[in-house]
Length: 267
Image 1 (cartoon, one colour):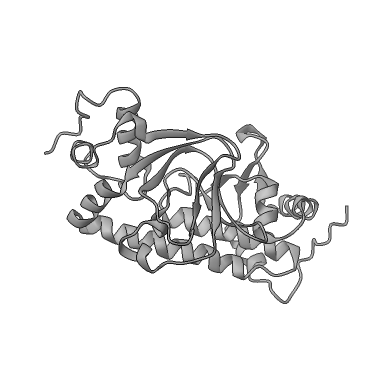
Image 2: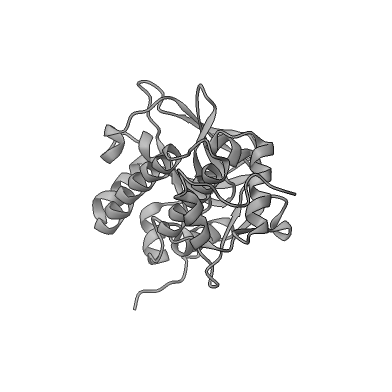
């Protein structure tokens, strides 16, 4: 059997990053860490920390492309903000990747959109994988090609969910939650062993993704808490949110014409 010991040259943060990639990253999960260490050629300067409201890059700039794929290691979320409406069109947690739609190869050559700011909403640690190193991995591993293609599909499906946001507040908020549930489940990040989905999800992010005002979002979340769809989770921080009842969430998400009994809140 191949060794799973990280080479001695990878110590401290580098060793932790490689172990994290094979355990938690969608693209590299279940890889042999020794083989990955040899092919990816990770160096310390590629590990970068971004602080709240700090920009990683601007996506889809005319005649510009990226030279790195960003793998989210810890922290976050990282958001993608589309101008001029300042709507959030992407929410990314550890295990996901950013920048693939702006790399000048594979499906990135076909993907165009309006300029969008990619920024850390909260402190986030990422690994910058060089275009050259990633292209080499891509050419040599068919499994990576399939996973990479899946990332493009998931990005489109996330935005498709947002297109289904109605003006009815419960359905709009449920749409954002449903998009995240689908995304994180497909990436293999969630749910936990108890079947619970847990998110660090500030009200402001939900508001800008659903195009509701924050006060309305706050009231919808209160209503969802009262009927047992979600549970606010202060132990995970002020923005912690657990989804307890996926079936009821699906009902609200599909409720584009009818109404839910608890909205508007009676108390």
